[in-house]
Image (tube, rainbow, N blue to C red; front, top):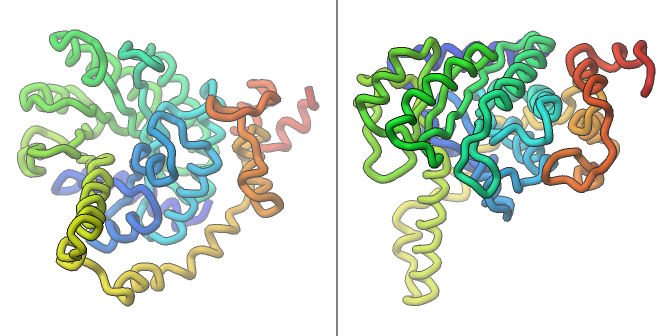
Length: 349
């Protein structure tokens, strides 16, 4: 593991304990990440919805893993701040698939993830907490194998589910403590907006509380800080606003033949180029990240072969892939934690 990556990981942890909450205007591609970093952000976090929309997919793990990794690679190539990636429910059928994905992200330079329990597909019923506990534990094992203080932010969707309002706070507390016991470093509760409930949850949690503020008239950061919040995410809000602004620019040009909305606030070509020149030298270094200790799972195969085959030629075993062959779970888990030599000694199935 590169020393610089460990320093970024340690910094990301420290930012959750600073004098003010860590503010994260979430990015969806390399350009948005650089704009956010250039504006003064101390860290970069991605929005899963924004990344999916930018690449032509709906939200909800519809973005193929190949394209997720490619987008994360480009972000890590152009920013110097710590990068955390939203991996939704973890992709894949089980915890080992999630571990393989996180191993690939670590090799790209990522120092944290956001992972959610979520609701059952097509329903508003919460997934059982044991599912996320297993995925968190596997991610923690992968991070320990890489000797990286990887930040796991566990998102709880109680306030987005069909759970009765009076039961949400207690169920959130119960799940949060279970996720912390499994290895989570932070708790994210989108939809939590009541001041008393925010303060109550912040008091009982042994880790930083993250709330969502990507909507109109959300509480200001100083008010959330008074309630005990340590991290504030804007989620897909910045991209929603950007798309709306682009729509206004296009409508004005198409309907009125005017360009005032566009011209009021825009970068010069020199300013836009300047966002990338200072970090362009990192691209080659990031591209040469070695394949180490991730085992032989489908995501590992992608990273190991990326210099020999285009991303589109690799198939991954996840819920949004057509692959049908996969290594046994025990072999992928052992390999993810201890490398290929461990499975070589054990023998091929």
